[in-house]
Length: 89
Image (cartoon, rainbow, N blue to C red; front, side, top):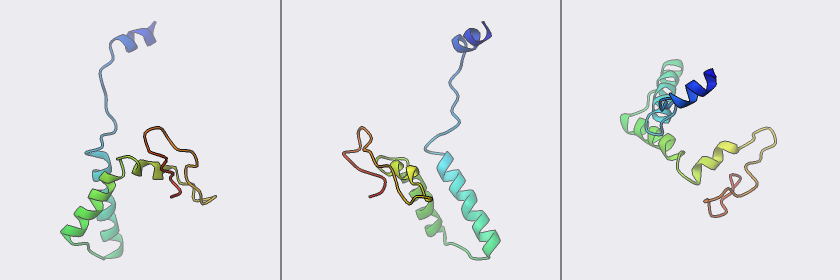
């Protein structure tokens, strides 16, 4: 009964947003890197890194999230809508 109530009265909640999550995480990682190493990126370099993290959310780049470093292999079957792109390519 409680589950049904929650299901019927739910609001949309977004814990992930392609315009904020990756860029904000990347910004924090860059700051941490600069603090821990003493090396500094230029503002232009920071923007390149942040843009790269945004671009990872567009097909077929998101397939690279399936890389397995233990066995050094990526996704071995093509996902729908990726025109046969494999993560290991």
